[in-house]
Length: 455
Image (cartoon, rainbow, N blue to C red):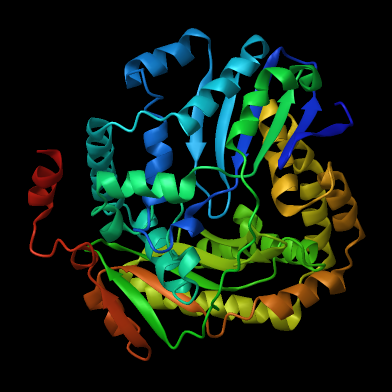
């Protein structure tokens, strides 16, 4: 692998970062656009994602079919991704079409078609996604846990790639166009490239990107994750119960990050060998899967915000309370007794072998390089991560488990039959959520809603 990431600044407020790799004559690009869903505060939440989706219908002068065929004819792929603070235009294809691929992204950014019929079709697709999503307990868990866990930080309540459903369903076309003109247009860009190309020689061909530059403006995100005195039950008439526990944690830039990464792996992120899987699945047979996740946070200006730990599992509804109590019991055991040296050595061996496997392909390298850009990490940071993990002592990992896995009073959201779950969790202050009422569709049957959105 080539060892140098080149950083170029061809014009004001614009950076090009590229890693040259000669294995194949292809390119993978992230055009990082420094506007995200946090900018839509004051508008209907979800509008930023709608703009990104509508851009993919093509620029003025081309129908969606013509635009798609133009890309396919040259073997180009282009998609957009909405983030909280940074959105991305992801492009890949043969190296000979590098400049043309960037040009296509530029054209939809500055000269979008924005046709009413495309917006109507997109909105119908969104409604269908809502219907399908609200039949999937995993989606319901993700949506409502985000909504309530971040209720004190308005900027993070809405999933950036979905928004707030009641508001997104009420979007109108003129509002979307106004958001594009007032907020979306103009942003500081960064181009992240992995390719066999000498990108420096291509800068003149993509100099048009300078036309969409604007000044970078820092902003602050206010609010805190509060203390949770009640639990939330989203009522779904299903045989399973889905549980998600969450609590604030340290971010990607914290000195204890690697120690907590190992502790989290041993507690619930290492599949069948994790403490939680051994207890709940292997010994007790309560679940097929239980996992813990350390979300490393969201980079905002020079800060990393909203890092959190979560534990999630599904079980029969009759076993929900027992599963919850066993999760807490196993966490308390880990915090009081710690891990063993054998567990630590196994974790070190896993990361030493698995981390390099995440930077093999062009797409993986691009993802890693993009992470380094967003979090301000040194290039090839994963190599130092391996060394940091190797240097960890057992007491470091046990201390991280004790300090950060205090789940005695977590945020708790359950999805399942509220009549049973409310009874089993009667010692809590419970708020029951009817998802259909939340959507403003109470009284409409499943079949009626299907007809309503597909007519």
